Amino acid sequence: MKRRIRGPAFLLAAAVLASPLGAHGAPAEGRHEDLTLGPAGARTAAQAWVGASAGAHPPLIVVLHGDAPFVKPSYQYVFAQHAAATVPQAVVVALLRPGYADRQGRRSDGVRGRTTGDNYTPQVLDQLFRAIGEAKARYGAGEVVVAGHSGGAALSALLLERGVASRALLVSCPCDLGPFRRHMAVKQFSPMWLLPVRSLSPMAGVGRIKPGARVTLVSGTADDIAPPPESRAFAEAARKAGATVVLVPIPGGHEVFLDPAVQVALKALVEG
Image (cartoon, rainbow, N blue to C red):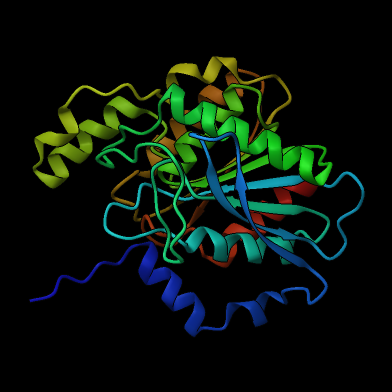
């Protein structure tokens, strides 16, 4: 019996079948580019969309997918294309995380890991930092906004803590790594989640968020992977660090990144 996987691949197919580009009004004038960013040995594959009204120094929205244990992630490209229509003054760059391959045959350098929260390492952050810096220079971008789902949200939070971005949209975020991995070990009856890792936890570094940073956390009310209390706890800690924080609960489980409500939250974050 074939197992049904209701993850990013399912959402991508559903998004295409529902013709979401018509719903979001993707700009005909917008420019799409396939990119390879970063130096040899740390190359990151990406797709970029230049919004129809992007100016000389547009905001740069960087999109990061989740850990994707069962599929080759491409749903981040769908999100990015929608975002360029939702925030047409921006350039939106969807990165393929280190070690991953996508459905179009591209691959980023690096080690994917076991997809057990073991890929949020200093080396991964360095590679993403280089890719974002090159994208920022390429488009003459001003402010950087990171938007991530699940493991990509954890990495987005870590990039915010490093000062790479000033705004972050964190969707279904496993922001407190230790409790998250213990929760998943029980949920999946798998000791793999208990093996030592070199990953960094956003909660451990939340005090490094610069005062004035803006953070929006979106969580599905029925998320049993990164339950809503995780987002609420990180939100409280980020507020104590001086960030402006918005919590957005929406109906659904863990795979809500392509929900239209997330685009609404992104627009409010960028333009607020």
